[in-house]
Picture (cartoon, rainbow, N blue to C red):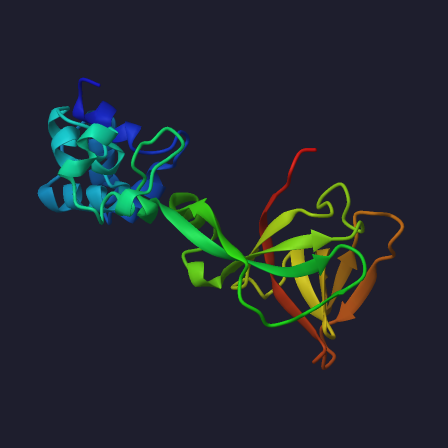
Length: 239
């Protein structure tokens, strides 16, 4: 990469919107346009913010010399950098140092949200954590990362959308329902369902036609019903 602009653009995912970048580094749209389209080099304070957001090596960004990310240097060079930067020896499957700050570790609980009959709610410690890219979580899900958890789906009522055994990422900050997939607590049971917002009520639907839809009256005192959170992502094994 021969130019500053080429190196700068390589730091961001394909398809990223310019507004997402200039908002993260607190730059005006007009100032960022000069950088992004004309290749102007930003002032030192913005360069530092770019480094804070991306983890890039400023020497490489400005001159093209060295490596793009100190934390991604080859293993033979890793000893030159602080242990905190190389995540105390964490490496990828090829042995390259990994910066754990690039990830959000979200607790995975053994509680299951039923796509079918309800599963009992219980308070317990997480089984383990699942790693998600911090950039994706903070830009496309929420910056309130402490409001996230992962649980499993049990049952067949959402089959075709969410299958038995799928892991689902729940955003507990989203408790005002819109149209979409949500985890509900009804009594002492958890359900994952498709919700449609209607005037004064919620229509709760399953994907499997064997399960009848039902409504929740929002004007009633529903102390036994709560929105636990919105489903933001799912993952499954391909068998």
